[in-house]
Amino acid sequence: MRNLLRLLAYMRYHKLGVASAFAALAGSVAFTSALPWVLKQAIDVGIGSRNRRALVISAIAIVLFSIGRGSFAYLLSYFGESLSQHVAFDLRRDFYGRVQTLSFAFHDQVETGQLMSRATVDVESARMFLGQSLLRFAYALVLMVAVIVIMLRLDWRLGFLTFLTIPATMYITYHVSRRTRPLWMQVQQQIGVETSVLQESIAGMKVVKAFAQEDAQFERFRAANWAVRERSLMANRIANFNQPFLLFILNSVTVLILLYGGHEALGGALTIGTLVAFMEYRNQLALPIRQVGQLVNQGSRASSAAQRVFEVIDALSEVRESPDARPLENVQGHVRFDDVSFGYASGQVVLDQVTIDAPPGQTIALLGETASGKSTLINLLPRFYDVTGGAIMIDGVDIRSVTLESLRRNVGVILQEPFLFSASVRDNITYGRPDATQEEIIEAAKAAQLHDFIMTLPEGYETWVGERGGTLSGGQKQRVAIARMLLLDPRVLVLDDSTSAVDMETEYLIQEALARVMEGRTSFVIAHRLRTAQRADQVIVLDKGRVVQRGRHNELIQQPGYYREIYEIQLADEINAGGGAASEPDERVML
Image (cartoon, rainbow, N blue to C red; front, side):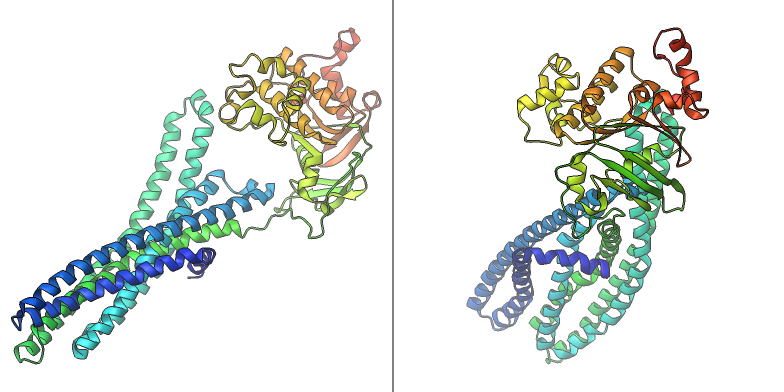
């Protein structure tokens, strides 16, 4: 009930919609519950007293009441749908807003498919409950109360016999609800698994086809899909088992009314019209009883769905902005890592007391083998994660004391695999600055060695790049990312200088673009080739989260250690021969 009550709390933002829906509900109940009474009058007064005028008036009243009931039923359905759509909008807004604020640590643990399932399937389950099940339940409850009151006024003894069945109905409903709710939670979780498999298969379709794993991937999806089917059938089997008992209770009421009411009518203590009216009210009472099982089933599913949505909305980001955070302004770019340590929640230590001092405008090259901590180090600077020890300072200001928005506008990030949105080239370049002028866009594109290529496209800057930039090559996507960063004009750069997978010409263009980007900016570069380290003001070599070497290129090649090993493998032969940097580095260099 806690999840459902919290879901209902969203309705407080739409008071007019709630009032309209319940006004329509009241009108529908009023006309519905009045119809049997009009029928009673038609039989007792019109037919019983042979009063043709009363019979005609009753017939007209039945037609008018039926029209009124239909009209209010339509309004109830419309207002209910409108209200549920508004609440679903609010839920998705809060869900997406929370996902946007959660740190990388959260996204490292939660699958994309699970998040997609919660934002779509679970929110829709909650919406259906609010728009249909809840109003149906409210309608059934109000109608039940109205029918009970009318029955008591017509004949309290027949009414009392009818009420004897209500405790049994409530017990069965409660018992079924307790059994189905955990099953529906399993169904919602399994739908998330199915969505994850589907999303992963589609996103990795090129890999699936390249390794001819279509059958294996299909089997994986079939298994996830079958699990959803099995769990859904189990939950529905228990819920539907409830219906025969409720129908038996309903038919028991009919028997009681016929036996006792018929006896009273034969003795003259009860009119035929009253007995007929009781039978009609019994039919109206059947609606709530028949719907109880269905409503409990839908309520259990909605509760499970709401719980999964609220788990994300309630999630706390490990990276949180201080209440008194101030904007980071007038940045010069002096960056200092002061005894920085970092470890994940599992207790794994990734960085251990790393100290780096980068004056404004310097380029810091980071080298090291896989899992040495390079990527983690650069992810700490824009606060994708928070340090667990020490501090990171920009111009002497701890980055934890400034607003995240201002920090990330001053710390630009270019990843090894840049992400492009399904939009135009212009939209992707201006993603960080939508208000940029055409001149600024062109200037950034030229600096990224991209403008000439864009002008060869069918629609120039308005050309659609497709999902994840699928219509562009890897080098072109990387240059779009560079242009996007140039337009933002950050004072501190964080980039993964990976050009090992592109041809020589593309590599040259990317290197030229990166050189333009890094001019006058403090840059932290994961160096996959030593030519980047040669140009750096400082080279930091990491091993298992600790700094094992630091200095300039000329200094490090004189010292025994990792850097000299890489130098000897990659550059020594060509430099000794006067040929410059090697074009095909050893595989270890690209780690």
